[in-house]
Image 1 (cartoon, helix red, strand yellow):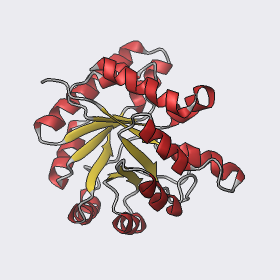
Image 2 (cartoon, one colour):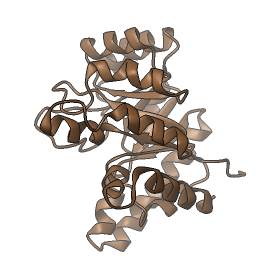
Image 3 (cartoon, one colour):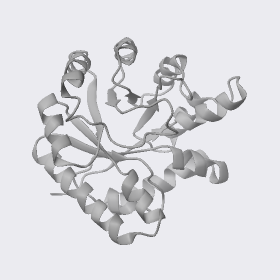
Length: 247
């Protein structure tokens, strides 16, 4: 297939994390959203967690008003989060696993094992014209579950690939990269748009970005971390350049 332009969704959660460390309003994630738009980002991703450790409820409407970029709301599969999504009508809602004690999302959603719980949630969001995505491991059984749930998008968890490279396990990372590529091809073949994200950096993004079926990468923590040293706009532009070169 002919590779298309790969979209970059920028997760701005950790701008809010820094703000919340001291209280008050600075740094403002809305300003980050405006910079994402100016730097060539294609979307804003924000995860409203149960414990509100970074993004807060009041941030969502302000982020949506600040730019014309689509908002991808990451959310747990709970009634509270469904009601919030329905009230704010983001462009997309990515359903992720969530445990209060975790530092960050530690793996993919078990869509196959939670079909009955997820089915009414996916239906309610879809009926509200919210594009539903499932954050899953790159596995055939999870893709099959997404097909049965009629989810138009899946986002593959790339954390295992990133961690293997960081640990110097290049063989393991190549195996995981093939698993992601095979899963992306399978999803695309079945009419599901594949996205990817978690742990992606300047050093490891190119092989993932080169997978032709993947339509979007969602990257946050690394870009915000690099922004401390080179600025958020430059951080986004450099990631955008690497993604474009991969295609």
